[in-house]
Image (cartoon, rainbow, N blue to C red):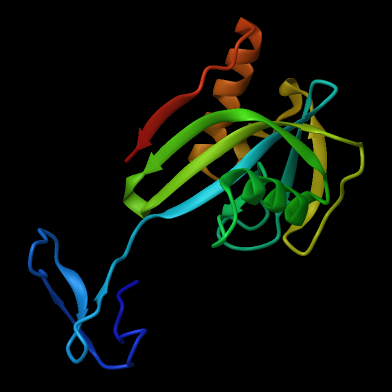
Length: 177
């Protein structure tokens, strides 16, 4: 998404390298404000209850009708933990307690950073919302692997089940290009 108008004064912006910078930026042609475009932060959880993982079937594009872990964009003025808990509730009606950060994925080709947390469900209450048509707990053997919405979610789940068998969940960072 290219910035076309200045958020401060409404004038047109132009692409140029500001003084003391090394990247072309959207710079206001009137007031000179530099508009920075940065990656979006996506936060989410791997909600677990009695050894099962909570997944939701997306009711929104992209990948509508596919299964995913609950995750979404971090909002301004919230921590990554707060965002992950909020997104989980918004998509599944489940309440979770964060255990620890588990995976960070740099998804360079779409300018996103995914931070996924291990979490435990604090009750067995969950269900569909406006954002999901179905919400279910899955054993590993029943995960709908061919219907997972995003490569990053499939990779997170694969890592999780592999680590669970090994008895430890190390935090790791990966690049998806």
